[in-house]
Each structure stands twice: as structure tokens, then as C-alpha cells.
Amino acid sequence: MNLPLNIDFSGKVVVITGAGGVLCGTMVRAFAQAGAKVAALDLNEEAVKKLADECKANGYICEGYKANVLEADVLEQVHAQILNDFGPCDILINGAGGNNPRATTDNEYHHEASDSQKTFFDLDTDGVDFVFKLNFQGTLIPTQIFAKDMAEKKAGCILNISSMNAYIPLTKIPAYSAAKAGISNFTQWLATHFAGTGIRCNAIAPGFLISNQNRALLFQEDGTPTARAHKILSGTPMGRFVEGEELLGGVFFLCDEKAASAVTGVVLPIDAGFSAYSGV
Image (cartoon, rainbow, N blue to C red; front, side, top):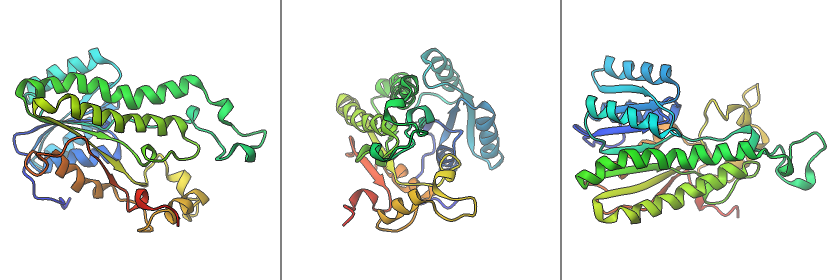
């Protein structure tokens, strides 16, 4: 791919969770192409092994590891493997996260709900709990394990993945919105907590991207935008969705110890202007 910035990450060990997904998979390829030793972690072992093989076939350094970000003992084992394969972690990207249908309402406004729809009162508490665990604890636990390497070296970078939901919650997805707001808050907490150690912690807040998970929500079977897609685009000044590779410039900048040496506690929107627009 054409990298957005000419930053050399040679010698850096980059750990990326959620690497089996499209967005974090793109980050794996980008960091590997920029010279890093990349550890790709995901619950889907087949996906990250295939990704690692692809990177190695192109002459880059990458290994895939099966890992559940909610299981500390498993992550400790993976950490030991990475230490043996590559050495201590320099950059951690907490990319694992997501929503769950059990924590989502069918209707945007309660007064418009029909008897057949799942409303706020029907939200499954276990589903809500899962969303909070996956997004918040799925960021906290890997940070507890891999940031130890950085604390010992007194240098390193943590990058979390927030969302547009963290600024103003979107309809239908209360748990995911609240969980991502927690990620933004946690990013600032980590930045303060580690400020004296040489560790920087920032986050990106991606705008609306088209993925396999949300394609059916954004487009009809004939390829035309849904009503929800029209709402999103009408609230986006640039009038389009964000491409996955457009995140890389912000990611590379925030992870580079020279370019962003004094940048910590920042949540960077990469959203085609969505968070700047009032709707008027």
C-alpha cells in the first residue's frame, strides 16, 4: 500500500489486538511495511496466521497469535511468546472491540416503537455487559500486560480506538456509545498516570467506515444507501464515508516518538468533519 507518512518503525515491536478485523489488519500491514516487528493478536487464529503469512511473503516481519483480550492468563502466555520472538513491546494498539445485537435497540425513538421491536426496556443485560467488557476491559487488560515492557524501558506508546459515539451517542447503540466514551476517558487517565514514565497514550476516533459488520445497515441489497446512511452523510461535511487507509496518517503520527513526542492524552477524530458539524 502507499503509506501516508514516511516514518521508519524499524526495530520497533508493535502489538496490535483485534488484528483479524479489516481496520486493524490494515494497521498490521502498514506497520510491517514501515519496518516494525508486528505481533498480530486476535481470537480468530486463522485470520491472523493468514495475515502474518501475507506480510512475511512480502518480506516483512510479522507473526499471528491467538488471543482473547478478556483472558489475562492467555495474554500473559502470548506476551511470553512475543518476548521470545521479537522482544519487549514498544507500541501497543488496542484495536479489539465492537458491538453486540443484544445491546442494541431496533428503534431510534421510543415513542415510535412498534410492539414487534426491541426497545430500551428489552435490552439484554448480559449483552450490555459483554459490550462493556469487550471494549473497556479488552483495552485495560492488554495494557496492563504489555505496558509493563514500556514502563521498564521508560519509553513506549499506547494507542486506543475510540469512536464518534464517544463525543455524542448515536441512536440505537447505548452500550457501545457509553463504552467508547469510557475509552476516551481511560486514554486521558492512562496519559496522566504514565506521564512520568516516558509512555504516551492517545486514541483515534474513526468516523463512519464501511465494513462487513455495518454494510447491511448502510446499504440496501441494490447498493443504494439506507435511511441511516443518508443521515450519516448529511451530518458529515465532506459528504462521504472514511476509508480504512485514511486512519493510517493519524495512527503513524501518534505512534511516532519524534513527531508526537509531546502529544499524550489526545483523542484524534478522523471523521471527514462529522464531529465538527452542528447540523446547521
